[in-house]
Structure formats: C-alpha cells, structure tokens
Amino acid sequence: MSLKSFEDLECWKAARELRIFVSQNILPKFPIDEKYALTSQLKRSSRSVSDNIAEGFGRYHYQENIQFCRIARGSLTEALNQMITALDESYIEEDLLQEFRERFERTKAILNGYINYLAKTKME
Image (tube, rainbow, N blue to C red):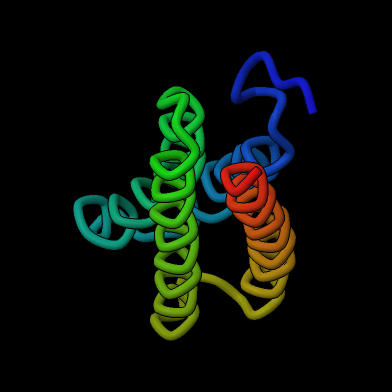
C-alpha cells in the first residue's frame, strides 16, 4: 500500500463525506439558540474525525497513528450521540438520523480496517 497523503486514505474520504453531510444537511436544521451548544458540538465532533485521521497519518509512527485513529473513532461515536440528541429534541427526523447512521457505520468499518492494517504492519 503506497500512500502519499492522508487524502489517499479511504477512512479519511469517508470521514470527509460524513462531515460534509452534517454541514449541509443537518446543521442548517438546528434552531439558532443551539448555535453555541449542539450545533457547535456536532460541527466540532464531525470535523474531529477527519482531523485526527490526518494528524495520525502525519506522525509517521504506527502506534501514534493508531492512537489518533482511535480518537477519531471516539469523535465519530460522539457525533452519533449528538445526532440522537437532535432527534430527541425534534431538530431532525428519523430518516436523517438513519442516513447519518449509514454513513457512520461505513466510516467506522473503514476506520477499523485501517487501524487493523496499522496494527498488523507495526508487528512486521
């Protein structure tokens, strides 16, 4: 596997798609009084996924890269929790949560695969 940039990583690409989905389809639905609360939290957690994947890639050390990918996975899960909160507060409909969940599961699966790849490569 020859990767020149974090932009070549499938997990980063999936995280980017998820972030764009949140920015374009979810955040505009939130009321203005959530601007500094749930809107900000969801924006930060969805951005954190791709941010941490990129930062880990730039560390050039397997264990550090794995750790940043684990942080990315935590941010991904945090974003799902915030989406559930948005549903509970009636800011979004169930179909939007379901669409997010599909993107969440895809991103998580690819990210877990990358973590496993890094762990195996580290052992060689």
